[in-house]
Length: 102
Image 1 (cartoon, helix red, strand yellow):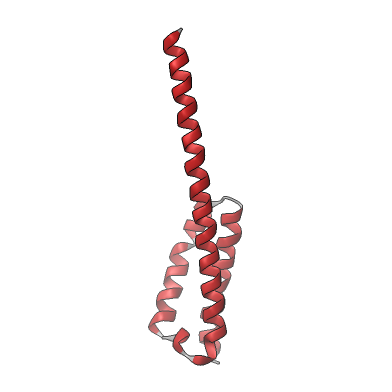
Image 2 (tube, rainbow, N blue to C red; image 1 turned 90 degrees about the vertical axis):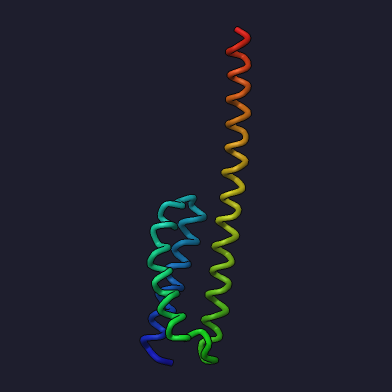
């Protein structure tokens, strides 16, 4: 294993783990702030075709699991936010109905 290739993979893994941690905390702004760094690393790893090499199979599987986990957490957050917005809109309509009746 090349140290340079392993370093790129480790950096990407660390960013994904950090994004997962931040997403769980509800800090979506910080998750977004790390997207550019992750994108750069993914592009570099893709250009070098690192994950196509058999010796990096474990990394490929780990990165896929982390990415899927991040996507699931973000989807869950999105659903939660949509539900909260719906409750807020319903509450506003109720308040407006009461206000117009007074």
